[in-house]
Length: 122
Image (cartoon, rainbow, N blue to C red; front, top):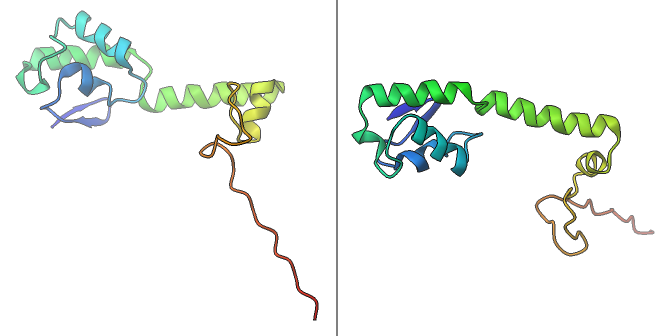
């Protein structure tokens, strides 16, 4: 097992796929990091030499990943809420922000509905 940016990565996965397991690194960033480190993106991490793995670690340290990335996203959402924008309001109400319909879909984004308890007479 290889540990990069606080994330344990499986050595049998290809370098490009393995790097995407780190929060904040997507397809494009993983490709760019592999290119800069001169690491073949389609080779498993177990075939890489120690200097190549160290180069990957160094390049990933320059990116905003894991905690720093999540903190930046949270601060962006907080800023939207504070300025009272439409997107901030949608975030505050736990509704979709990007124009999706909410009448029938958005089940994972909408809060659960609380059923009202009706007291019976008598």
